[in-house]
Image (tube, rainbow, N blue to C red; front, top):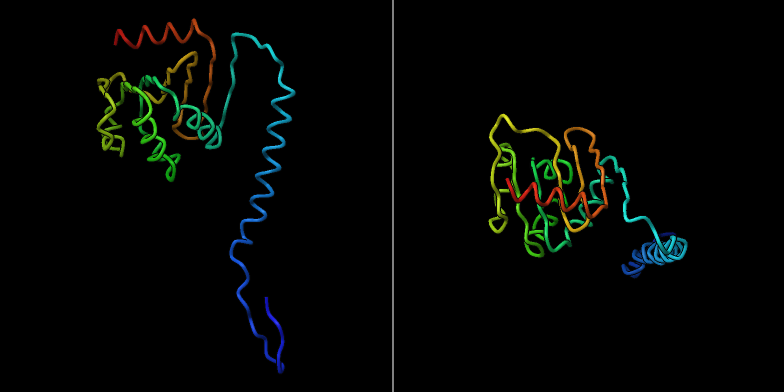
Length: 173
């Protein structure tokens, strides 16, 4: 904000809190839309559900869900989360380490990532000839298969039988 006095502009610092006003307005709007969507959702849905996610935004959605689970198993972890989600990966893995019992079977390449800094995760490594880029996340009632090599692609399956099968297979490994 400025005013002109004796043909000179005099600037005055406005309230810095005003920077948050548009953001708060968008947050209120988003909450209203979420509420409306929740009201529209069918009350009963199939016990089975498959969703496909693509790109970095898809990864963010899935990892936002995974970061709060109590029990997590990861098969063929690559550590590519640190490449694709550079700014939030450490926070996500730290939350997983803190909140869940996580067991990880990883590729040897993951040893070259920041994932090795998280000591509370139970990690075993695959032999080099078994490595690939298809990572599987197994958590209660859900299985997510992710290929994060170039453009991330994720398939989330919500099905108790599939979850139980993958969980048993994981335990054998």
